[in-house]
Image (tube, rainbow, N blue to C red):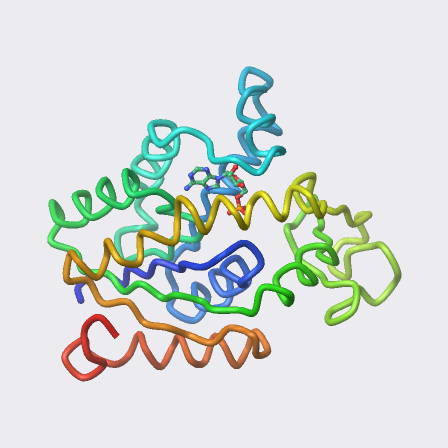
Length: 225
Ligand code: AMP
């Protein structure tokens, strides 16, 4: 493919952000997370209070807003050689918008479906902590910071995301099942290549599995696969 376009697909907690950063660095393409873009907007623009409330409830913000943010981001020069999408598309409407965008630019894409056991997702999300300054992600059991409660890189106090509380996590998982998972069938119906990756392993092992898929031409990996 001329551009390396990867769509990281999977429920909250499946490791899309971690893989986006790892694989993005390996491929030399930007990791584009709509969740991060929206959180950044909420931090810097008080006019989007409605968006913050939607995010804290675990629902999805409007397709119109997200499609516009993504379209603007994809026109930036660093996305020309390719990009990794994390958390987008999340609805059929967004899926149609993205495939149309790619078609107009003659670009192919690879969908990576990260699969993780439901209980592992809950454990990962309730114990996730983030650095609000540099975005580093920790896990209280599996990847704790060296000094309790502060970021290894810049010493900032770690926080739990506002939507990483158990009731909101359950809502986000329900929204995923209802609104996002049907995209897998949509991609397949559109003849796109969907690769299943078991994502319960260590981040490096999962990144190796994804990197192997990126190198295999679609004809060998099998479409719809
Ligand atoms: P994430 O960081 O991907 O877990 O996203 C956090 C929250 O941002 C989600 O629960 C949604 O409220 C919102 N969000 C992120 N990406 C999208 C999207 N593609 N469409 C709609 N809402 C989104």
